Image (cartoon, rainbow, N blue to C red; front, top):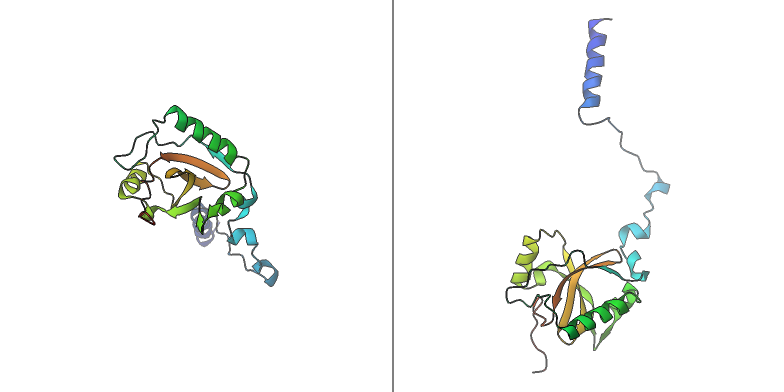
Length: 170
């Protein structure tokens, strides 16, 4: 075997072992350019029933920002009934509930929350960009993350302090 041929084989082996095999880029044809709607719009969850999990509950009470889990018996019953009713609705139904032009249940950007809530999310090392909240009653909110049709419960906020708003009509 000649020296040149040996060097070419060695170089080929090195290329193969240096981060995987080379795969040439796929050249798209006109037929390949169609992108399914589901790939551009993540709305497939909207027609699914809401599911929820309590595995990611933040048990550390808030530092004056309303987050807490020391629920009274009445609050516990109210929350469990709410979660039971929730599983009978689709996400579209939940997101469309509202009155006077305001939606009861919707998401928020993390930077819209109180500074204490934002700091707590950083401590929890949550990499989510948005948080979802359900309005239970009056000022009471249930916060968490939506992953597909799954709602991952995070905080119980009976005083509406995680996302404080100015009182209207006062």
